[in-house]
Amino acid sequence: MHRPTDEPEDGAGPGSAPPPFRPHPTFADLPGPWSGGTAAPAGPWADAGGPPDPGRVDPLVLGALLARHGWRRRGGAPGRYSRWTPPGSATGSLLVPESSAFPDCEDLLGEALTALARSAAPSAREVLIGLTLPSDEIRWWRDVPPGPSGTVPWAVQERFRSAARQLLLAGALAVRGRAGYYGARHRRQAQASLAAVAVGAAPDGRGLTAFVPVDTGRAIAVRLYHALYAAREATDYQRATGGMEAFDAAVAAGVSRELTESLVALVRGSEGARIALEWAPAAGTPEGCAARPEPVEFSAGDLPALREAGARYLTGEPSVPVRITGAVVRMRRSGPRGEGTVRLRVLAGAEVPHVRVVLDEESYRTAGHAHLVGLPIRVVGRLESRGGFRRLTDASSVVPVQVDEAERDRLMKSLHENLDYFEEACGPGE
Image (cartoon, rainbow, N blue to C red; front, side):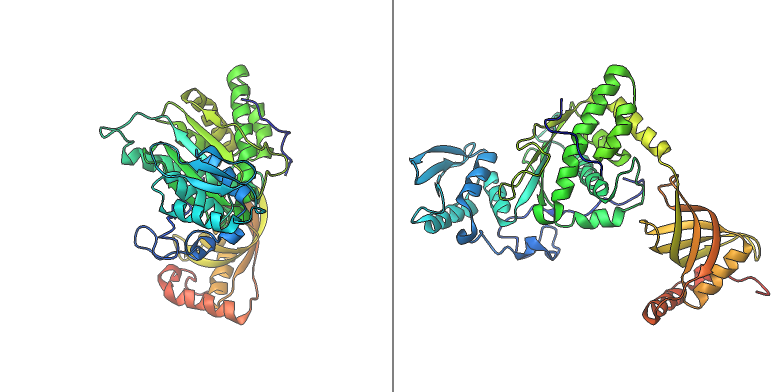
């Protein structure tokens, strides 16, 4: 498959928990409890108290969403309004004005939105979601054999959801910066950027849809658009020539080990998978993207190339020179003297939450004293890609760092809560 637009601009580590996703909401659920008995999280989805205000709905956007979700236009009064019928066996129809200039536009829209909110068609809910909060839609399909009941087994659906989460996280990581392998870098920020994403599943378990709000997530959808086509082209090149150069160039488009691993997880155990993106009608098409992108398909025959690319990214990503400021959260060494291992909670200098560093005796003593008086330390070294950028090597120049009183009090409280970790921080005579 060839990418339909110009080339993009330059521009999941092991053991990490997948990012949280909001369950797929119904309009009765939006202002109240979410599935699973948890309280509705704060954010734009929580503000929707029912069908959208008809005075704020563009009839052209409503028509575009209806067409996207399989509703059929069946007549109407030309230039005044059109009639739409739901897909499948669902009954009923909607009258949608052709434009906001129609005299009874708001009344007609109000009736259409109420009918959508009461409709039994699954697509009606998706149309209302798209109106409530303009969202780009990312869709996945997997070709898998059905279970005994005719639907996909629950365990297979869970693996499907996990692969979709990995793909979205890979896109969010690529927005933070280009790399062949991220490991623990940027992970917290990437997960936070996905907090407003809503995900829903098709009734048969073979499809998933992610609604990515334009205001907070369009950059993620655009990056995934470029990365998926680049991954497809690189895979085709590798299968045709055996060369991996295309995967090296694809890093600039957002392809990474995290993305190739998500594609492997998506395809494994299936006959193939497709991914499609559809832009929010209210926001229009992003610059440099096709208005109606073709789905990107991957099959079992692509797995060797994707796995080889992931391994190449893992070994090829270099270590990073850094100067980290961090609070000591754990110290350990085998005896009262000599070098020891320190775990730091990173405050500045690297996009990772924690690092582990081996310090010589003098530096280890400095780290222990700094923590005992409620101060972080600054250390220079190299952030190693092995282990997911969680280890600092060649450590030197360890010095305490002055902080404001509030931060110092918080660090002291952490010490008192974790005294067992620091009992060996200072040996006899220190």
